[in-house]
Length: 269
Image (cartoon, rainbow, N blue to C red; front, side):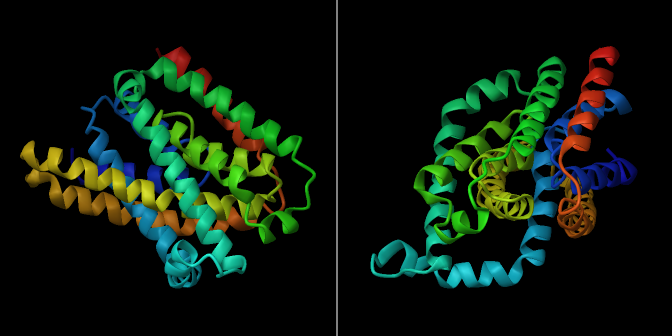
């Protein structure tokens, strides 16, 4: 690992985290194409930290508002309103993600980074993304947002996010697919997806820190920080342009890209 490779990792993470093409899938197969040693899951998680910080910066005003509503949303049944309902359903979605992740994490650890499995996930879940966008739920998306996704919708979106523990699925792709099926428009689905990533990413990093420290890899800390910074910068740019782009175009182009990448991966193997 050197600064050039850390930069490549950061750039790829920053671009692919928010585009529904699976950043973890790209990071998992990158060592094979660059013929380098796989830096491991913790390094990948740290690249996700950079994009998580980009989400915090980009949606900072919304996050401040939701944080102020957290205690009333959780402990006051009389509290109502759009932001209150959003926080309640956000918490439910996060809980659903955690529960499903705990159920499938051992299987993901054993088979998740297998290149053939990644290639399958890229194509299959890319198809689901395109279908959910092509045949969207005709529910008035504005009305859905007023009721804040409803409980079952939030649970299903949160549970779907957990599947992104498998590289190639795409966390943003699977949550956007679920949100589109629930009636949210592209921009609303993407914004909710980006925010929903924060608790899971930070929890994953905290979970892996003791393992990283025990491995005695402190000498690569500066490389990690550089990769985090790079993914933050490119992630911030990607959020801005992605939210503008999806207003004018669907997800068909991402499905085609995922098919091409899957075919290349199969051919390479």
